[in-house]
Length: 456
Image (spheres, helix red, strand yellow):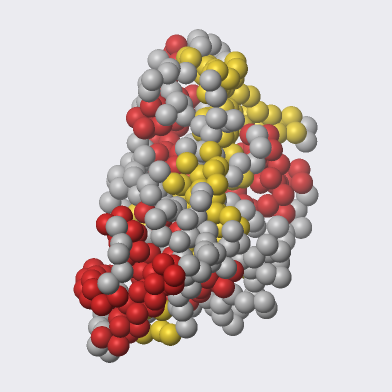
């Protein structure tokens, strides 16, 4: 492998041209010629780029590649269709400037997740549904080449002594990588693509994730400074909904966001964004979410938005919410609203404080007002399936009640059918909403069924 500044060129093996597959190809004379062209283009790029070339100028390097590519084709005199010619050029560009075989998937806006299971299997998620692609790597060595391209610019290391890493691509996409000996079938890459589009409440209504009534209710809860947890399983849309609810925060307030990987897209003017830092190659310098939460309390926040609680920072958040820092928003992985509170209890214990469980539960009951739970259903759609109020304690148990719920009635032609409904119960915190000067119609809690509308 040869490297010129940030351009890495890897030896080329034959590949199949003329379809979308990138994998171990038969060494036919034609494939040999294609491989020869790619290798010559890459070598000429190294020799012709001046040492002072800005290799971060992808447009400039691409133009240089294109001219070298055209010259090389003329010298080789290899018959090639226009489609094959375009395909081969894009493969070369992806090898030199991008992430090889998965580069087209990163540009595909319909793809939300990319999952590389060794060299032979690449999956994507579209509209909540996993599907296998016909994209392949040549071998595990090429997968490791892409892994190196991801982690090297970040000053990170991944090898047998440190076989797992979390990273982020320049566009904000989150990456998890695990390699042998832990990954038995070869290097495994999981990419959660960064959502470039900013989702609005109207987008979520059109997607049947929630209803206009629920949007009005949640907007009132945010403005009235209720503490809200958005819960759900993996890839249920928690961060997307957190983004939407964060959009209801008043522009006049000082908002501090704390995330592992910066994904929130707040448009308010006074926003301070904090991001955790992983350890360096020596295993030092790590700054975790808990340290950032503690520091944020010293920064005169009006609101604290934590991308996800997953450890001891849960206790610090509880203490902040119970000492005047109302209106906080966060997300948590869980299977139900009740499970959310149990997980927060467990995470609070991870802070290392010797507190009895009842004391922690009392803090939770006093701190949180609302749990908004999301599920990903069998047809891949994401829905707010429960909105539950945290009412307080009865004995050693935290008391909750559902305010809104989604009820599934069946599946027709692969699509989930069902309805959203209020349960006819007025939340105890309505006084807090009304004190904030917000008026919701009394009928908002009437148990009227709002069925999923097709054609949206």
